[in-house]
Image (tube, rainbow, N blue to C red; front, side):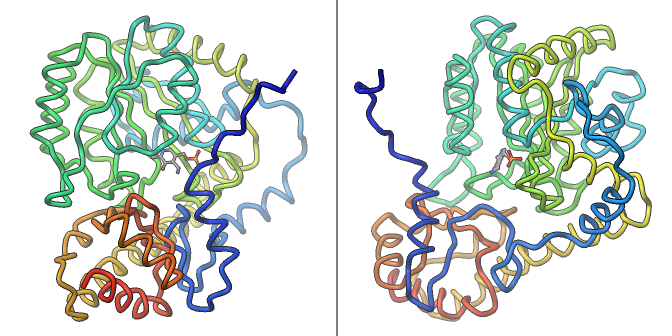
Amino acid sequence: MFKHLKAVSGDPLLALIMAHKQDTNPKKVDLGVGVYKDDNGHTPILNSVKKAEAILLEQEDSKSYLGIYGATEFEAIIKDLILGEGNPLITSGRIRSTQTPGGTGALKVAADFISANLKDARLWVSDPTWGNHKSIFDSAGVEVKDYPYYDPATNGLRFDDMMATLEAEVQEGDVLLLHACCHNPTGIDLQLDHWKTLTDFVNKRGLLPLVDAAYQGFGDGLDEDLAGLRHMAANVKDMLIANSFSKNFGIYRERCGGLSVIAESADEANAAFSIIGQAIRANYSMPPAHGAAVVYTIMSNPELKAEWELEVTAMRDRINGLRAKLVKKLAASGVSKDFSFIQDQRGMFSYSGLTLEQVRTLRSEYAIYIADTGRMSIAGVSDQNIDYLCESIKKVVG
Ligand code: PMP
């Protein structure tokens, strides 16, 4: 039965993580893995999460099924976090939100929904984008096309090229995927003016925006990071939003995210939501409970919520502080390349502009693990390894 099957090569990032694990060099540095780490290289459980779990251990009284949308009280949590409490889209009923297994689950449900209901819609993604975007939409039978985004010459955004490609090639009904903030893998974000231009473009050309919000709170602030998303949501007829609680609550393995649909009217939103429910049922039936229960417990308790907000701020400040330190120490090392752009990037990742050859040398000679694309996970930098990292980059880049 399986004789014809050939093994596929796994995700190169997972291979990189394995290679780092097996490396015996005591100076080894892991800048591959995409999770937050503290200065000791550990991915901690937030205090607010630990406290919420203690409350749940005490109070949880059933493990019965939740239903396809997850816990009903969770819908308001998703909407409030994404749009801000009291947003007119919430009060008018034009947005409906469901709990999903992580941001990945939200994207998979969105892909199934689009594939089954929006015939001939193609999905436009940035070049580059998170690798799984393509896999998820490919597997749902949605054609994926890309628009220019990263400019290796400036280590910045190719917004004019992005718009020129979209102007020339989109068809009415196509889906435009945008990263809300902390673009993975580049760290280069759209600014509010870009969001305004894109909002006008979406309306003019009849596109459906799908915004992936996986890192809310990791850029400039919980509200600040979604300013572009909120502008777009307020000014388009329809929109899909996939969000993840993995990073900002540090609950990666609990698989908690949300999928929201915004439509022209509450009736349309409810109809779309019912069909999204069908897609969920045929996919995984219903989401796991624990992560959402933790998030709900925190968000509905003012003290825990305040503590969580401080913890998100601490994670964000650490990453932005590391960006500043890296830029300063690299410049002080006398390296020939200007790395100041690292400070303008946001979120967990940085496209470093290092070439494949430089990345490979850093790996083989200095045990510094960076993805072949040059993507560095900034959270993997620490006070213990930053000097070694900067000296090594100087040696390799010249
Ligand atoms: N979107 C992007 C851009 C991501 O980087 C990630 C996580 N790496 C996800 C979605 C999915 O997140 P989750 O782990 O919650 O499925």
